[in-house]
Image 1 (cartoon, rainbow, N blue to C red):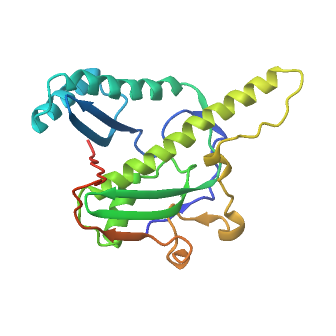
Image 2 (image 1 turned 180 degrees about the horizontal axis):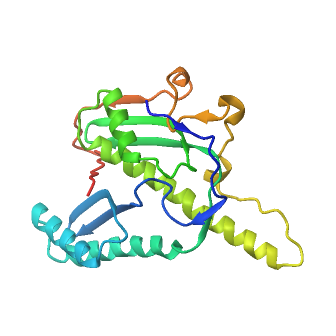
Length: 239
Protein backbone atom coordinates (compact mmCIF):
# COMPACT_ATOMS: atom_id res chain seq x y z
CA UNK A 1 0.00 0.00 0.00
CA UNK A 2 1.01 3.60 -0.52
CA UNK A 3 3.36 5.01 2.08
CA UNK A 4 4.03 8.62 2.96
CA UNK A 5 7.33 9.92 4.25
CA UNK A 6 7.21 11.74 7.55
CA UNK A 7 10.78 12.92 7.40
CA UNK A 8 10.22 16.29 5.72
CA UNK A 9 9.75 19.33 7.92
CA UNK A 10 6.30 20.91 8.03
CA UNK A 11 5.08 24.30 9.21
CA UNK A 12 4.00 24.45 12.84
CA UNK A 13 0.92 26.47 11.96
CA UNK A 14 -1.14 26.88 8.79
CA UNK A 15 -4.48 28.45 7.94
CA UNK A 16 -7.42 26.20 8.72
CA UNK A 17 -8.36 23.60 6.14
CA UNK A 18 -9.07 19.92 5.96
CA UNK A 19 -5.74 18.10 6.49
CA UNK A 20 -6.21 16.28 3.19
CA UNK A 21 -5.37 16.83 -0.47
CA UNK A 22 -8.89 17.99 -1.35
CA UNK A 23 -10.51 20.56 0.93
CA UNK A 24 -13.90 18.83 1.04
CA UNK A 25 -16.36 19.21 3.90
CA UNK A 26 -18.13 16.13 5.30
CA UNK A 27 -21.89 16.75 5.31
CA UNK A 28 -24.44 14.63 7.13
CA UNK A 29 -28.18 15.12 6.62
CA UNK A 30 -30.89 13.47 8.73
CA UNK A 31 -34.38 14.85 8.07
CA UNK A 32 -37.95 13.70 8.55
CA UNK A 33 -40.62 15.49 6.52
CA UNK A 34 -44.29 14.52 6.47
CA UNK A 35 -43.51 11.07 7.82
CA UNK A 36 -40.73 10.41 5.33
CA UNK A 37 -37.16 10.18 6.57
CA UNK A 38 -34.02 10.93 4.58
CA UNK A 39 -30.50 10.21 5.78
CA UNK A 40 -27.39 10.74 3.74
CA UNK A 41 -23.71 11.63 4.08
CA UNK A 42 -21.49 13.10 1.42
CA UNK A 43 -18.72 15.63 0.83
CA UNK A 44 -19.07 19.19 -0.42
CA UNK A 45 -16.68 21.76 -1.85
CA UNK A 46 -16.97 24.86 0.39
CA UNK A 47 -16.12 27.06 -2.61
CA UNK A 48 -19.21 25.97 -4.56
CA UNK A 49 -21.96 28.64 -4.77
CA UNK A 50 -25.22 28.25 -2.87
CA UNK A 51 -27.02 27.74 -6.17
CA UNK A 52 -25.35 24.32 -6.35
CA UNK A 53 -26.88 23.40 -2.98
CA UNK A 54 -30.35 24.43 -4.16
CA UNK A 55 -30.00 22.37 -7.33
CA UNK A 56 -28.75 19.38 -5.34
CA UNK A 57 -31.66 19.55 -2.87
CA UNK A 58 -34.26 19.89 -5.63
CA UNK A 59 -32.75 17.04 -7.62
CA UNK A 60 -32.61 14.78 -4.56
CA UNK A 61 -36.22 15.50 -3.63
CA UNK A 62 -37.36 14.81 -7.20
CA UNK A 63 -35.36 11.59 -7.58
CA UNK A 64 -36.56 10.18 -4.26
CA UNK A 65 -40.12 11.56 -4.57
CA UNK A 66 -39.81 13.47 -1.31
CA UNK A 67 -42.24 16.23 -0.27
CA UNK A 68 -41.57 19.69 -1.71
CA UNK A 69 -40.99 21.21 1.74
CA UNK A 70 -38.05 18.86 2.13
CA UNK A 71 -35.96 21.15 -0.11
CA UNK A 72 -35.67 24.18 2.23
CA UNK A 73 -34.88 21.95 5.20
CA UNK A 74 -32.08 20.18 3.35
CA UNK A 75 -30.81 23.53 2.11
CA UNK A 76 -30.73 24.86 5.68
CA UNK A 77 -28.93 21.76 6.97
CA UNK A 78 -26.18 21.86 4.33
CA UNK A 79 -25.73 25.64 4.54
CA UNK A 80 -25.47 25.48 8.33
CA UNK A 81 -22.70 22.89 8.21
CA UNK A 82 -20.83 24.82 5.53
CA UNK A 83 -21.16 28.04 7.54
CA UNK A 84 -19.59 26.34 10.55
CA UNK A 85 -16.69 25.12 8.41
CA UNK A 86 -16.18 28.56 6.89
CA UNK A 87 -16.15 30.17 10.34
CA UNK A 88 -12.77 28.51 10.94
CA UNK A 89 -11.24 29.68 7.67
CA UNK A 90 -8.55 32.32 7.96
CA UNK A 91 -7.64 31.15 11.46
CA UNK A 92 -4.49 29.29 12.32
CA UNK A 93 -4.43 25.64 13.25
CA UNK A 94 -1.56 23.64 14.64
CA UNK A 95 -0.23 20.93 12.35
CA UNK A 96 2.35 18.72 13.98
CA UNK A 97 4.12 15.59 12.87
CA UNK A 98 1.74 13.41 14.80
CA UNK A 99 -0.17 10.33 13.90
CA UNK A 100 -3.69 9.84 15.22
CA UNK A 101 -5.75 6.66 15.48
CA UNK A 102 -8.96 6.71 13.45
CA UNK A 103 -11.81 4.25 13.85
CA UNK A 104 -14.44 3.02 11.43
CA UNK A 105 -17.64 1.37 12.69
CA UNK A 106 -20.27 1.42 9.95
CA UNK A 107 -23.19 -0.49 8.59
CA UNK A 108 -23.91 0.24 4.94
CA UNK A 109 -26.80 -1.77 3.51
CA UNK A 110 -25.86 -5.37 4.44
CA UNK A 111 -22.17 -4.72 5.07
CA UNK A 112 -20.78 -4.06 8.53
CA UNK A 113 -17.17 -2.89 8.70
CA UNK A 114 -15.08 -2.14 11.77
CA UNK A 115 -11.51 -1.00 11.52
CA UNK A 116 -8.89 1.22 13.09
CA UNK A 117 -5.71 2.59 11.63
CA UNK A 118 -3.16 5.37 12.01
CA UNK A 119 -3.32 8.61 10.03
CA UNK A 120 -0.67 11.29 9.60
CA UNK A 121 -2.56 14.57 10.06
CA UNK A 122 0.55 16.47 8.99
CA UNK A 123 0.30 15.02 5.49
CA UNK A 124 -1.81 17.52 3.56
CA UNK A 125 -1.68 15.30 0.47
CA UNK A 126 -3.58 12.43 2.07
CA UNK A 127 -6.68 11.20 0.26
CA UNK A 128 -9.51 9.55 2.27
CA UNK A 129 -11.34 8.55 -0.90
CA UNK A 130 -8.32 6.75 -2.32
CA UNK A 131 -7.72 5.08 1.03
CA UNK A 132 -11.35 3.90 1.16
CA UNK A 133 -11.19 2.47 -2.36
CA UNK A 134 -7.97 0.62 -1.58
CA UNK A 135 -9.39 -0.74 1.67
CA UNK A 136 -12.53 -2.03 -0.07
CA UNK A 137 -10.41 -3.68 -2.75
CA UNK A 138 -8.19 -5.34 -0.14
CA UNK A 139 -11.21 -6.62 1.80
CA UNK A 140 -13.15 -7.67 -1.32
CA UNK A 141 -16.04 -5.35 -0.50
CA UNK A 142 -18.16 -5.02 -3.64
CA UNK A 143 -20.98 -2.73 -2.43
CA UNK A 144 -20.21 0.62 -4.14
CA UNK A 145 -21.71 2.59 -1.24
CA UNK A 146 -19.25 1.32 1.37
CA UNK A 147 -16.20 3.19 0.06
CA UNK A 148 -17.84 6.64 0.13
CA UNK A 149 -19.20 5.92 3.62
CA UNK A 150 -15.70 5.10 4.87
CA UNK A 151 -14.27 8.26 3.29
CA UNK A 152 -16.93 10.45 4.90
CA UNK A 153 -16.30 8.88 8.31
CA UNK A 154 -12.57 9.56 7.97
CA UNK A 155 -13.21 13.16 6.93
CA UNK A 156 -15.56 13.71 9.87
CA UNK A 157 -12.85 12.62 12.31
CA UNK A 158 -10.17 14.71 10.58
CA UNK A 159 -12.51 17.72 10.56
CA UNK A 160 -13.00 17.37 14.30
CA UNK A 161 -9.24 17.25 14.86
CA UNK A 162 -8.65 20.25 12.58
CA UNK A 163 -11.34 22.39 14.24
CA UNK A 164 -10.05 21.48 17.69
CA UNK A 165 -6.55 22.50 16.64
CA UNK A 166 -7.92 25.99 15.95
CA UNK A 167 -9.01 26.13 19.59
CA UNK A 168 -5.51 25.07 20.60
CA UNK A 169 -4.02 27.99 18.68
CA UNK A 170 -6.55 30.41 20.19
CA UNK A 171 -5.63 29.32 23.69
CA UNK A 172 -1.93 29.72 22.94
CA UNK A 173 -2.46 33.22 21.61
CA UNK A 174 -4.55 34.20 24.62
CA UNK A 175 -2.00 32.81 27.04
CA UNK A 176 0.75 34.86 25.41
CA UNK A 177 -1.23 38.04 26.03
CA UNK A 178 -1.61 37.34 29.73
CA UNK A 179 0.85 38.01 32.52
CA UNK A 180 1.69 34.38 32.63
CA UNK A 181 1.77 31.98 29.73
CA UNK A 182 0.97 28.57 31.16
CA UNK A 183 1.49 25.64 28.87
CA UNK A 184 -1.78 24.80 27.18
CA UNK A 185 -2.97 21.25 27.41
CA UNK A 186 -5.79 20.22 25.13
CA UNK A 187 -8.77 18.42 26.61
CA UNK A 188 -9.63 17.00 23.22
CA UNK A 189 -9.77 13.22 23.25
CA UNK A 190 -8.89 13.13 19.57
CA UNK A 191 -5.84 15.35 20.03
CA UNK A 192 -4.69 13.59 23.18
CA UNK A 193 -4.86 10.28 21.34
CA UNK A 194 -2.16 11.48 18.99
CA UNK A 195 1.00 9.43 19.38
CA UNK A 196 4.51 10.03 18.18
CA UNK A 197 5.39 6.86 16.31
CA UNK A 198 8.86 7.95 15.23
CA UNK A 199 10.32 5.95 18.12
CA UNK A 200 8.71 2.84 16.63
CA UNK A 201 9.07 3.43 12.89
CA UNK A 202 12.03 5.83 12.62
CA UNK A 203 11.71 8.70 10.15
CA UNK A 204 9.25 7.01 7.82
CA UNK A 205 5.71 5.85 8.35
CA UNK A 206 2.53 4.98 6.50
CA UNK A 207 -0.79 6.74 6.39
CA UNK A 208 -2.38 3.34 6.84
CA UNK A 209 -1.37 0.30 8.83
CA UNK A 210 1.54 -1.80 7.72
CA UNK A 211 0.60 -5.38 6.97
CA UNK A 212 2.87 -6.69 9.70
CA UNK A 213 0.77 -4.70 12.19
CA UNK A 214 -2.59 -6.10 11.13
CA UNK A 215 -2.71 -8.22 14.27
CA UNK A 216 -2.98 -4.92 16.17
CA UNK A 217 -5.36 -3.16 13.77
CA UNK A 218 -7.28 -5.90 12.05
CA UNK A 219 -10.31 -4.91 9.94
CA UNK A 220 -13.54 -6.83 10.49
CA UNK A 221 -16.17 -7.17 7.77
CA UNK A 222 -19.52 -8.91 8.24
CA UNK A 223 -22.41 -9.43 5.85
CA UNK A 224 -25.76 -9.37 7.65
CA UNK A 225 -29.18 -10.54 6.53
CA UNK A 226 -32.00 -8.13 5.82
CA UNK A 227 -33.97 -7.17 8.89
CA UNK A 228 -37.35 -5.55 8.65
CA UNK A 229 -37.60 -4.47 12.30
CA UNK A 230 -35.04 -2.16 13.78
CA UNK A 231 -32.92 -2.21 10.66
CA UNK A 232 -30.11 0.29 10.77
CA UNK A 233 -29.19 1.84 7.47
CA UNK A 234 -26.34 4.07 6.48
CA UNK A 235 -27.17 5.65 3.16
CA UNK A 236 -23.96 7.35 2.11
CA UNK A 237 -22.89 8.77 -1.19
CA UNK A 238 -20.22 11.02 -2.65
CA UNK A 239 -21.18 14.07 -4.53
